Length: 578
Image: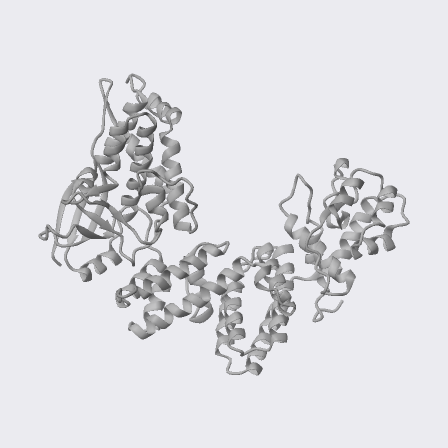
């Protein structure tokens, strides 16, 4: 392997006529508070005091590995193999400093520090010293532009991290905060705010790296897999992405692999789980087999042939799965507008409320076989309904440990994908339901946990679960799925003002229109009963039939009704009998 290595400061690296290009296969910007805190502490610690004279010192931050021919003076581009996290972070820091110097009416200092962001080639034509396609155009407009567009809104997780880094540095360099740091660390030094900003700038510029250049991208690929300097370890998805891009090299007239990967990232940003590592693992478990951590890379290398056709097909599968995953993790009623699909949205929304993740592996397979016409719609809805019920009891109420559940879902997901006809798909689903039913908590365990559910305005953690319970209760009493109560307030029969220890129990709660709820507020039980008669909710009507003749609503009745509701929701599934 032929390479050149020499010690350089960050000032040297940014003063060279170089355009540092973040390659398409590189991971996205991933630094968060932990890495930023460490860098900040190290930079401040490196500023020294000698007889009340403050100065920046050298601070080694690792390697900067680049692909390019240093003997070719005409080509200023260098592909960044390792070090992009630090280069982007320092670029963000320069952007903050430029704005702060400008705010201090130090336009010359502002221009000078911005020169580390935008340089000029030998013809005086400006160029960005860091070129990155992934967060484009957010990074360029929100960070690199001299006149920053502060209205730019981050859309992807990477863009959110970039903005978070900008705000972290900006907050630390704000005058009051920075002067406190300098006063605490250097009490004898007479430092102005401008001096402190310049010292921080100088300390960044004095950071030292081992500046490594290689000519061969094959060598760079080897380095990429084995070398990772200070910062976050590479994730399995980083390495898989690198493998894909090392084979899918076509860039003209369009970089198809890059565009496909970008579309996957966009889909991830549409969901509530903007984590491609979590998605990728669930996808792999759903289609290829059970694997954890680093084994995902080994599994990928052993099960996906390293050729253009196989890698292209794999990327296409990821794109479809990413779209399904976004639907699963961020259910939207507008996506399921047809009456026959109402049950799909209801289940996805419920699983989101319950915070269940293991089932996503099976859902990815279920969506896939439905799309390919390998399952009847009735069977599709049946299994979704059961999964909703099972996880309500298992997770939402009983908080059972999901030991072995992920592996089981992975196994049945692959069985379902392998089904050759609707009959074999139905058999797979029957087996899964039977296995899950065998693991359902007993009614006594469930009832005890159900009685522990508590909701008040002061203890609102379980609000979404309580809303779900009241919604299911309303459907039960209406005896029809046509009625889908989407908006109601939660009425405490025994008012919250009583501060009774049982007032947050499910048996003390009713669904009620907001206006009516507000009018009844702290009224006596007898007066509330009169008001309840104006409600259109069937749950309220049932309550009146059962308890409307009482003069007092007390602890005994709250406990009794809580048990009644618990029993209704546990035995709602036809497969279960009292």
